[in-house]
Image (cartoon, rainbow, N blue to C red; front, top):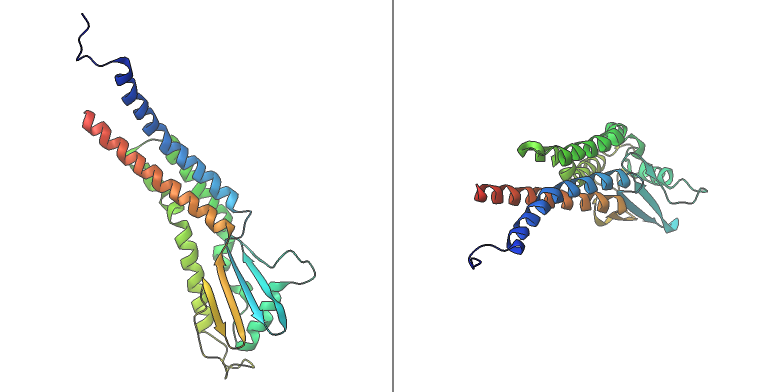
Length: 220
């Protein structure tokens, strides 16, 4: 007679399937996050529209991980136009900002992606730490941008043509700002959302690894 209390094949298969999912899902999340990091290079992370009386359509600036561009119109270098307007209020050239960050940005993104791949294939308790740079990248990017914007707004040239009309200020990195007769609208762009999605996947992977370790400890 079959023992009614004995576990069935379905009952024993379910925990095994759960263990396999907990084993592989974190690695999948790390690998997808690494791919998103590499894809993000092709898209702008941040954007700004400057509205001025002489430019009724506004001037567009897009910031990629390693460069700044205007819109797709080859007839107008909008970054240089914004630089020219900033000159009147005493702000330094945008091309001088974050030179070090821009020079190491692409290698840094590849390094973060490589660390995620290592974390995915090398399953050790501490390898989750390899994902920390990619996890914090969206916040670090905005924080660095904010520091540069603050530096530029607080260090105006006192000999600029409109220096007497403009007091030092802190340009917002998100939302609207008004500087004299200029209005700016700043926003995060596609590239930033891509790396933010990667950060969410990393958080999911770390949580899954934690659940897997707790279940393994419970079975032990």
